[in-house]
Image (cartoon, rainbow over all chains, first blue to last red):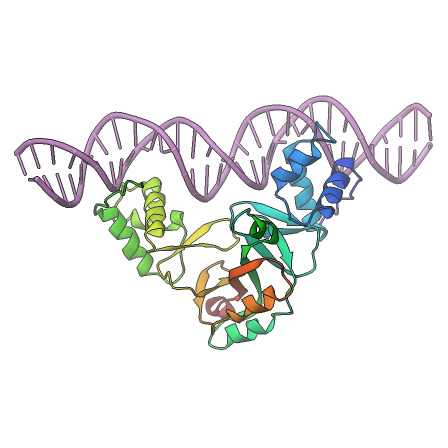
Length: 131
Length: 131
DNA sequence: TTTATATTAGTAATCATTACTAATTTTATC
DNA sequence: GATAAAATTAGTAATGATTACTAATATAAA
């Protein structure tokens, strides 16, 4: 029997959610920490990690592992694809038509069961193209 | 001017390459270390990491970051797709027809330049389906 | 063989993330 | 509004994967 833990409000958590919602680049925990510090100088990095993990558990935030060694966080939990800029490293949303049919393509000669996929696109973002 | 470093043979490196070539599951550095230790009890984990990095630099090994927190290594450097089993966590090759056209789909309404993509398929592998 | 240099084993350092703990906040109840 | 139980926090310590350092060893060319 899981002892459900009731969740109490915290300003730190609210600040984290608000900060995330205001960004398009899916920052890392450390980036969030350094920026929220401007408003809450005493917040600790552990609090940021703990809340991000909780928010993920609650389905309010998605963790994006995009192979740069750091976890990024996305307030948009709807399935969608990401683009990673080779120059600046930022992780951006990219709108792509539904690609679920590639699961069927992949399952064609595969002896296991495929439930889903994850895809990242690589290239140069709009801002870096200008430079 | 880059001072090119000549590369000398080492049995440890050879053992790493051979071990990797004999596997289908793209092991982690630590897994390779633990197995090569059976033949070379004195090999150190650092040697495994250093050689894997060198082999990657030489284009003889590919590093696969598949979101399970550990880097996996693949002796097949030709572009191909991977499958990750939700049960046992193993990373397997999966044969899929060329999917480069999804780059074009993704670039449609995107203001940057797309050079490539990376996709992972998730599900249950053949062996775990049996259980 | 000799000699220069790459490589190694072993260990220490780094970096992101997680765990721990006493003090503080939140929130339900009086 | 005061009280009390429980969640949350800040601060710090611990973890785990990976990288860096160094003196000793292995390789390869002369």
